[in-house]
Every structure is written in C-alpha cells, then in structure tokens.
Length: 393
Image (cartoon, rainbow, N blue to C red):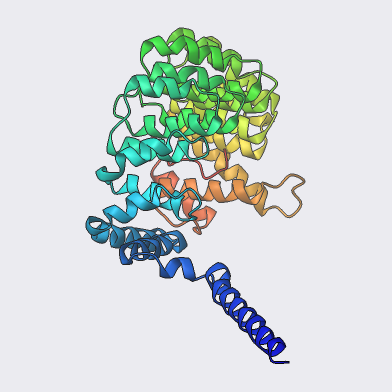
C-alpha cells in the first residue's frame, strides 16, 4: 500500500522540475532585451550612438550625432569590428556609412570584406574609398559592372577624386537608366579632355531623346567649337522638345557671336513657338552670345506675343538701343487696358516691371509715368547690363 504514494511523489517532483526548467528557459528566448543585456558596454554604447545618428534627419542634428560618435570612436574600435561582422544587425548600414565618414582605418579590412557582398557592396565601396582611395583601374572595373547601384557608387566616388578616369565614364552617358546618366553628369569635371568629345557627341546625337539630352548637357563641359556649334544648331530644331531645350542651353555657353546659320535656326525656333520655354531659351542664346541683329528684331516685333516681346526688348537693350524700353511699355499698356483681348500674363508682367525697375534704379511698384520720365532724361546709350530674366525657362 506504501509504494504507490512514493511513485506518485517522484512523478510529481519530475513534473514540477520540468515545469520550472521550461519556465526559466522561456524568457531567454522571447524577452526582447535579453540579447542586449548580454552585450558589452562598448557595444551597447556604439548601438545607442548609431541609433541617434539614424534618427537624426536634419543636417545639424545629423552632424552633432556624428560628432558624438567621433568623440567616442577611439574606445569603440572593438565594438565596430564586432558590428561590421553582424549581417543581421539593423545598424550595420549606418555603421558602414559612419566608418567611412570618420575614416576609421582599423576597420578597413572589415569594409573590404563587406564589399564582397552584393547588397552591401555599394555602401562598403564608398566607405573604403574614403579611407583608402580606389585606384583608377578599380574605378574602371566598377564602371563596367552591370549592377546599377555599383555604377552609382563608383560615379559618386569618381566625383570626389581630383582626376578621375573620365574616359571610362563615357559609355555610361548612354545608359538606358536616367539615374546613372544624371550621376555621370554630376561626376564630370568642369573641362572634359579632348579625347572624350567624340563619345559625348555620339550620346548627344542618340535616337533616344533622353540619352540625347544627357549628351547635350555634357557638351557644356567641352569647348564649343564651330563644328559643335553647327551640330547644336541642328539639334535645336529636333521634334523632341527636351532635346531642343538642352541644345539651346548648350549653345548659350558659346563665347562670342554665333554663326549666321545658327542665328537663323534660333529665329526659326522663335517663330515656330513650340513652347514658351524654348522661345525664351532661343532669345537667351542670342542675348548671352551677343548675336543681336537689331533690324531683324525690329522687323519681328509687331508679330510677337507679350512673352516674346519682353525678350525682344532685352535684345535691343543688350545692343544699346534706346528704343529697347518701348516694347516693355507696350506690355504695361496692354495690361492696363481692360478691353485688351490679349493681356500679358502675371509672370510676364512681373518680369517686365522688374526689368524696368532694375534699369531705372526704382522699385518694381513705380508708375509707368515715372519710368517714362526717367528714360526720357536718361536714354539708353550703350549696351545695358541686364539681370537674368524673371521667367521660367
């Protein structure tokens, strides 16, 4: 009769022990702070600092967070080594960025190892370059990779280098990815080597309008020779408005008077009136290069709308013609007439008043009579220095 109770007691003890073991084990698995508690003080400090850096979104607070990490980095080297070997840590991307920004040399090999992992490769390459600049050959190899993000990282690195391998970038001007093309433009030096010009021209003449625009914008980094001017003049009349606009922007950088054929093409753009922006840019090309045919301007004035009349007035003033202010007064008169069937819009009116105020040294709210009196006493006698047009081009 005494045996069953002893067996029952033993099974009860076993069951209770098992319950205690399971109960004690559960918190180690599910308690979110358990892993953090086991971290060393320097690792906790690093994660906290990186958390502050990650949460800071304003430039000032971001810089302050980075300064705090810089002040502690000397005793956080081991923690940084540890973090850069933790692929599942959410702070890893920020650690890579900070290691590069602070040029933490002790983790250079860690960063090079991370650059072998495809999803971390772009950020790690940028960080590595800040510590140990990549060679030209390494950049050439990166330009040739097919991963868009690697190409963008390589272009960002090239932008920081004093003399990057520019010629190796040129094929990316014709990339079908707009982000890559724009990154090439940002990475170009102010003056491209002469051997790059043929590839830039090839991109500028591409059948894809978006690629052509990139190539045309890149021409601003080359001397505009007579041959290139002829090429740009041809692009001004292309059907794609973006291409025409980019060609006009490039033409405006020419130093000196444009060739007669180029001037003729610009007037064709003006007369075609495909868009206000193109018309404005064509006028600006004539103005900025000093390619002003006064007789042609006066001949076209009666047929121009108010937007074009404003730019025609600028051409006459640029040439030092006293009657250059008259088209501006015509615009103001049309705005004052309640019966006008075609009044100038607010943007043109604002630009007109601003130009008159700049020339006369008055406020833009001055009366027409006040301006007319001023110019009667102070007629334009030489080429006027004009402010940039206050119009969207």
